[in-house]
Amino acid sequence: MSVMGLGYVGMEARDLGAWRKFGTEVLAMQVIERGADTVALRMDERCQRVLVQRGANDAPSFFGFETANAQDWQTVLARLESAGVSLTRATEKELAARHVEAMAWCRDPSGNRIEIFHGQATGEQTGDGPLVLPRPHSGFRTGPLGMGHVVFHVADIEAASRFYRELLEFRLSDYMIKPYRLMFLRANPRHHSVALLQSPNPGVHHVMFEVLALDDVGRSYDAALENWRIGQTLGRHANDWVLSFYAFCPAGFMMEVGFGGRTVDEATWTAREVTHGGSMWGHDRLYLDEEKRRAANEVRRAVVKAGLGGPLQITRGQYTEVK
Ligand SMILES: [Fe+2]
Image 1 (tube, rainbow, N blue to C red):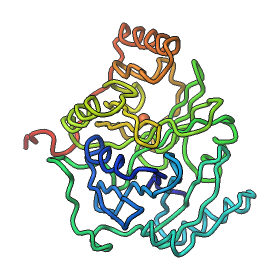
Image 2 (image 1 turned 90 degrees about the vertical axis):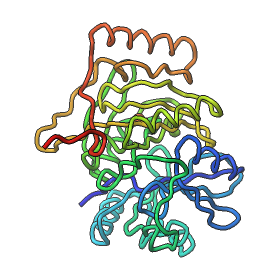
Image 3 (image 1 turned 90 degrees about the horizontal axis):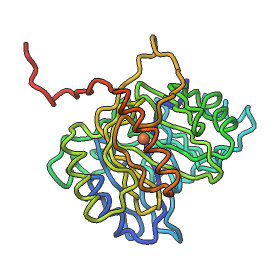
């Protein structure tokens, strides 16, 4: 068996206050204090999905991928070890900070710390009680789809692809060759839990969270426009159909708040090359330099001309059901 999806992410931060503010305003997550040097962000019944620990840098520190149980966890670890990947078992302190039953970590070929875990506690189990989001909110789309997705910049896309597809058993959903190489990989029906973007500078491009109502994207967008740096304006992706915007988080990379992602039917889906760019409309890539931004908008103009669209993905509870 393989990993089920993205379960949590970890950040190192010089200033926990920035994360409290970003987590509340843009992500609309519950801020939970875990001592003087740790802040956790909660978005569902789990005790935490973003763990922010005080450190010397503002940077992402780890990415947690979940297995269903101890047996699957052992299977994934054995596969990594037999491929020569060096694994480190979590210390008691690390297990306690993550509130998981078991965890071991390794580096992916780009150097990202990848943690394989199972048995993350709920908020009830850790004594944090029921979820209380900081403003009226529809909630986040998690459960069997995991907490969202992460997109990595990778210098060697072939090596990264082997790691995620052969060792962690992610499946290819879509890929792009021009103007840059990009692979979208799924671990569950979410169109992608990981994407790999060929780039000379390894790092994190963005992490995505999905909310259950379009209005919650708008409310977060208002807050981001007011107090945070926008990376990409409101827009809709051409392949996973997510309607979203991107803002820079305190760790220096972008976080995407989106709605209405499509899911993949494993039985019928065929991986295809995406030839029409990243977005149907919007997503003006403000983070790029002028030349690249102009090129991206050129691609988008052609997509708009062609009228590329996709059905709006209505989430249960967001419409009146006619019986
Ligand atoms: Fe995304």
